[in-house]
Length: 398
Image (cartoon, rainbow, N blue to C red):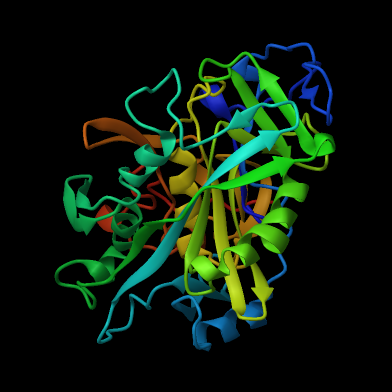
């Protein structure tokens, strides 16, 4: 979704409101407020919702050619469903055009973020908790298929060795990336470097929580996304320039059992990840935030599902403004939307992948051909998503 916050309906993908269930505010210096236990069936998961985006299509096109920018390409596709041409930008090189260097490696900076409340509660991805004493959330992410290369096969078709999003993108454009295709070496890799942790102390007016979880302090942090995203852009990202954060890199902010609320309304929960882009003096800076979740609040969402959703969307819609024909009433989308957000149509649909002895859950993602109604699909096996859930293009939405 625009602003890239993902709304995932958990427990059968039914989006439910919070009803009369209460959230607990923390104010500076306040004594512990009474707990309000919540059932996970009353929480909805959202991704990419409620964040303001300020990068225009013209800025995105200029960014593709700028020195020191994120490696992207810009191209045009015709959608036969409405005879309309759409211009889009993606990370990497154009898979449909033969080139000398079809493989792209993007330096990815993983930043563990400690969320602190004035009450004394903290949520840290750098500490183990009672639900997983074997490794910290940070270590789990570092060792996950998002960043660890392995062989991938979708529907019995081997698509090569790489990280999950590299495999997805090759499968997405399999017509060109297959061994007999125009660009058999095509791919996009995220080269990982972990930066020191950053602690963000949330003002009392923007800090809430849900109680009744199963891990750690048994609370799910609930932070005002408007405050948090502004703080990242104006304070945190500029402070990390000396550590290598710049437009050519992808900074990922990792939180643990931390959600965000939208519309300045604590009950409008829970955003568990988003990606965004904004213009700086050095160029367009893209970035993402994702929750590593094992809180027990969400029955159909865990570990790196949100991170796979957001990195997939960053790869195919880095500036959050790639247009499509309207689609919707599927995944987390209850109405219609018109953008190339590959995670939203399949929010909550995950695949179990065992890496390093730990079973992770990565989200299935929709293919380029699904959005632009291409037949046959460019994707692996003629599919319209990388695990075969979609076998036909997106339905029209109105």
